[in-house]
Length: 161
Image (cartoon, rainbow, N blue to C red; front, side, top):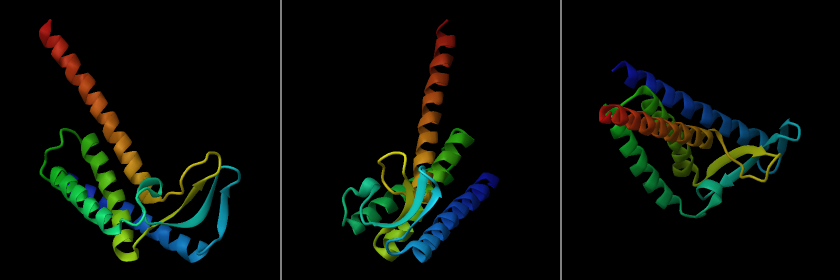
């Protein structure tokens, strides 16, 4: 039960951080200002993304809302039904959920997702804190799955000997 409470707090904190940074970006940078953060590396620039990652599928607001709700609901069910084998898996999924909810809030209330972090050292999409949460949580989850497969194959190898 404690892990559910702490994970819920973490989800709320990530969503709050995401929403506050989006509000700050809108207030300081809308409509076409930018602010250097680390010269030659990253700047802040306000963007409205009506699509999903890399602006793919622009204009599909309600499709993205529905898809997000289904995926987030499934992940929440999995998370809170104690099906996770480890805390690593549990927290990785929680971080993905937080990021998904952060962007879902934007889609529902604005019709677009506010992005503001623009890397300058590489040609890449502008993104936000929720995107970072989804990406880092998903990478952590994939790493967990790889480690779990390796651990299971070692256990199987030991049993076969």
